[in-house]
Image (cartoon, rainbow, N blue to C red; front, side, top):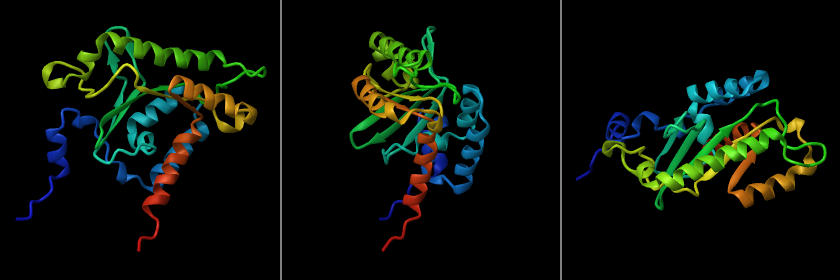
Length: 212
């Protein structure tokens, strides 16, 4: 007998993190244009933080987990730390979490000498501090919220990091290889805010492609 799939309300009601569940396929061209406009006038990290809290769809379009995606803003890790976001996805392999650190859209990643700026160094340190906290408190973080934990199922101290910083037009293309190598070594993706915009554009192009 055919079983009716659960409704959105039922899915959210059954999910301890339901308030943070994001219906990623709801992305529209209007969502992309709203982010483009925000980015064109943003001066501070807080401008992007506020937009992404109100429009979490934009922040998870680069993820691939087909069984759910979550965007948790300002996640507190004990009394010591508050992340800008923790985003998650679930696939057949389980849950995967990424700690997101936002920095100013007007800041640079590297100095003229090719060294990481103070802003980038600070962002990396933030992610590393969160990982150190998770190393000490992994069981509590991974435990269900129904059992007094943070509900970050399967989270580990080696969770991936994502740093969003600056604008592409303000960066030196000569530092791209350095940025990618640093990201690979640290397990932290380091991108300008154009990464979010292009992820949204790519998702729309994929969902609107002709299907035969």
